[in-house]
Length: 432
Ligand code: ATP
Ligand code: MG
Image 1 (cartoon, rainbow, N blue to C red):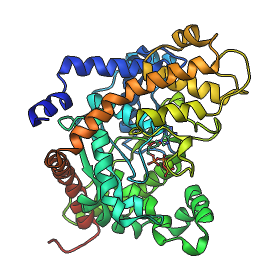
Image 2: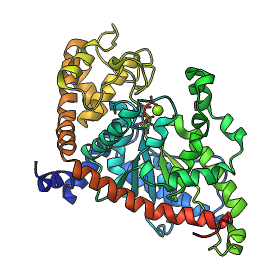
Image 3: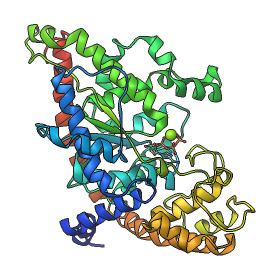
Image 4: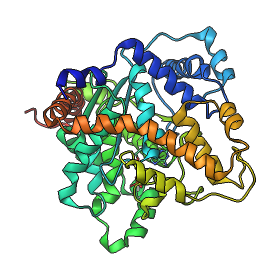
């Protein structure tokens, strides 16, 4: 396939993109109790309002993590209309990433990557492949670079557009590791010992086999975020504790080295880091395992049968849906706590078809599992097939992918180096 054609597919014209964003948001909102318009009418003013109130307080943010949800309420939205804040000086910046561990699955897509496609039109976005995080637990060295390339190609195939978002590999921007070291000196070890993920993962791995990196990777995550002076970080509920830690580290370093102290060192003064906020995706975007409707779909779950991978061929998808867990209730319904699998499968169907909840109920309430499974399988194949075709095209042109990653890391490094140099200066290092 020619590069021109590939570029045409990847860089869709603005009208098509606007349509895609509306379509995607409509699909996401269909899972929410509130209508689509709430995102536009509600979410953006609330972000700005909160930012301006922070500024009124002299920029001092409370240390408790404040989160923003994509589905905020009408009340919040209208309450802010008479105090419309001035727009921020620069575009609101959003960063996020996926680890190149295992295969990207439907949960990563619906819970993260698909939302990024909408975010790239609203914000300045940086999406990276967090390869340095992938080595915190035992891993296969020969697989790392392959998984990194594959994850980058999946970002592009899913619609992340390199003319809008910076797409890069974390380890290609050296500032991530350098800033992590500087931040480590100001991070009390007690803060890291409190991290639930560390406790859980180290217990699972057996304490003797756990590397120091499993304890300290939240500091690397803080570095990933703070380097870019990020305003918003889309995180799953499981990552909110790490984002709270990031905020605490930012405030501590700002207090220890920022402001007048930094000015005395020849710097600009003021905060070294923006204190970021969490952007929590809609609750309905949490995709559950195919074998247990109460556990989330996950790369690290031992059974491949529990997830649909984005690159699964048709017959594998068919087989996984055929064998997935169901129940013996008559008909199909959303939101019955006794039927988590039914809710999960209907929700997946709803998001990937872009239908409303009511449309799905009308279409499926009287179906039996046999006919719904065929309907769901067809919808999944229809949705994933174009992504798989684009993925193959991108992977068959390594020069193109390398170019995207090089450009992305160049843009990212420009921002990151400014922050890193400021921190070196404020901490008293001899200038290079
Ligand atoms: P692991 O099991 O190794 O932790 P994972 O499947 O959780 O892998 P991550 O790389 O940790 O994948 O997460 C990447 C992104 O995908 C994160 O933003 C996370 O919130 C999101 N995500 C992961 N699983 C799901 C899911 N089942 N539903 C919705 N979002 C998910
Ligand atoms: Mg995870």
